[in-house]
Image (cartoon, rainbow, N blue to C red; front, top):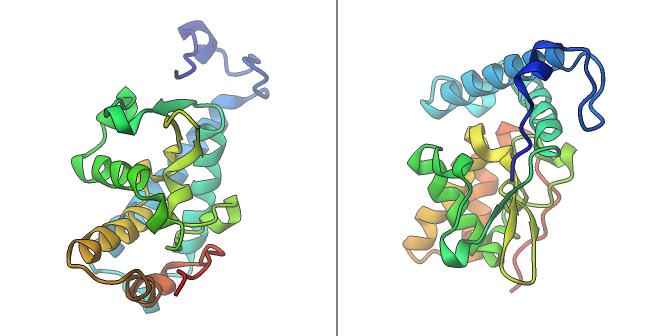
Length: 198
């Protein structure tokens, strides 16, 4: 269930809805700008125009700020899914197919992604691994609370896509972890993720 704001409330930026602070409209615009910087940086990195070793100094900081803004929005947006029954919120179903794929993979593969770090700066948000970029909470009945963090994060999705590809080739988990560490460590700080057993 996603909180909806009545039209009159969005026109009045000084209103206080559901404990929101005064002046939320400027903050939303700031979050939008930060998301743009994140998406632009991710797009450049995704097409190879910015290599990990030569990335402009502002990319990791812009990504970190964008994630902080996304986390603030995500903490007020409650989205649930039931992956076992393939029930996903509309917000996830509207995402590009590749992003839907990584969300579905994450929900079904905690046993793998709990040992895979992320390098997008989400360690600052308390994510323990790449799994935390997609799932906030797992419930005993199989439902999950979706984390919207990876809706537009090229690093999170890139790490997960690499894992999916290597798993489909039968690469052992320890080798996947080593490859992810090597490929993505230049993107930003790693989450504090344990190594796979064995």
